[in-house]
Amino acid sequence: MKKRIVLLPGDGIGKEVMHSAKEVLTAIAEEYNHTFSFETHEIGGAAIDQYGTPLPETTVDACKQADAVLLGAVGGPKWDNNPSHLRPERGLLGIRKALDLYANLRPIKGFKNLLHASPLKEEIVSGSDLLIVRELTGGIYFGTPSERRDNGESVVDTLAYTRREIERIVDKAFQAAQGRRGKLTSVDKANVLESSKMWREIVEEKKAQYPEVSVEHVLVDAAAMKLITNPASFDVVVTENMFGDILSDEASVLTGSLGMLPSASLNESGVGLYEPVHGSAPDIAGKGLANPVAMILSAALMLRYSFELEDEAKIIEDAVQSVLDAGYHTADLQIPNGRKVGTEEMTKLIVDYIRTLNASKCIASC
Ligand code: NAD
Ligand code: IPM
Ligand code: MN
Image (cartoon, rainbow, N blue to C red):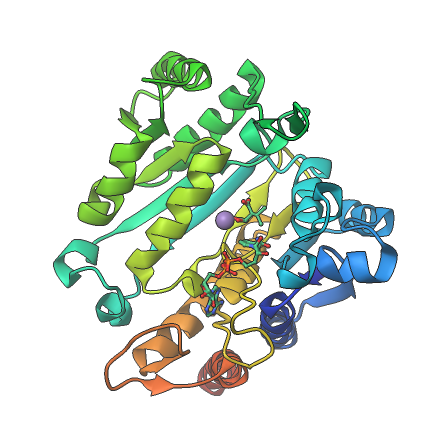
């Protein structure tokens, strides 16, 4: 299979983990006879420094023409005091909007060997396997216009959704639940927000179309609590943009580290963008300490959703699992008696597994 992949490493550890994902994909391409071509473009702070804008037109055009996009992370202290339109994060929001990537899928599944890595009790974490379906192109992130008023003495951010925007993400979540354990939890703040009332109405309207899916509504504050007291009770969680952002970082605690969570950002058709849930981690950037697993698992999601290479996606996931089972981990994971390694070594172990697996298959059947 021949595919064009655009790489947007971005800033901080984004660059480091992108290097890892590229190595893993190169190994997959070589071992399984695919041709992946990689084209790197700037976004975020790196693009501000080079082109004076967090999202150059050339980057948007390249993404639109690609078969899929991988994104590392954007942001960092260097640009924190920039005016809003010159912040790295604007680049990320801009590319999501430009590609209409309204559905952000964030799977959260604890690896068996990492149950101890979570600060939560093992009996709470065990059995948790959930998917957060986060609306990604609407809500308060895209309110217009967000501004300071009254000589800077007051401030306005607006939260708006159209019926269509809610319907399409809710449909996506119902479909995801159909393919999993058939349970959908819709998270909102319908006791306060008008947008959440409409969200809840739409979920209620839609449920007749998906009779095999059971539906519950949970207010976001209670959901935040249940996520870490009874995570196994969740299957698919669907929620608006900002609630999904916050709840997914919280849910990463189940896996032991934010460095473990991948995501897929999808539109109705066309190019998907795959990115770890974490940010540019300025506190560890440039030190070779970043956990590459979230980025590598995002590359696996790309193979699954954009290229329909389920077997190859599974091989990457198995490789990660096997390296973790062997006790290897980066410094963000607390594992007693584990074997602590850096970004490069972790990547090499995963790549070696992929290559050895194929070599041993060949010995058996070539
Ligand atoms: P962060 O996710 O970058 O880091 C939070 C904490 O988790 C840090 O202690 C960091 O060291 C750790 N961490 C995150 N990923 C890790 C990994 N792969 N391996 C090991 N440790 C990891 O969040 P933050 O510190 O709040 O934000 C830093 C910058 O990143 C900000 O500019 C923010 O806007 C940006 N950000 C970008 C994205 C994105 O590009 N998708 C996501 C979140 C934050
Ligand atoms: C994420 C990030 C972004 C978001 C920021 C950097 C704009 O936190 O991808 O989760 O809030 O969506
Ligand atoms: Mn976030």
